[in-house]
Image 1 (cartoon, one colour):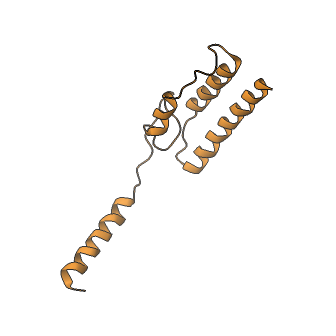
Image 2: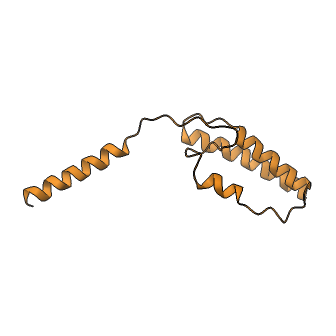
Length: 104
């Protein structure tokens, strides 16, 4: 391999390596955001755009779902993505069980 191509490959690899290292702490979130690592990501926008038209307004299922979403939104991220994801899923599945109990 000639020298300029080797130098370019090393420079590109080094740049990718350095940009992948990120020691920034996650941004503080408000009650309106989720505990996902990127609170302003499509996951938050996707929930806002969901169609809940099949559940009647004021129905027990809709109330249980809104309670579940409120509990999930109130969770504060700890900065450990595995921990945050596991606790978000616990709240999510508790809400799903509550909605299933209502349906039964």
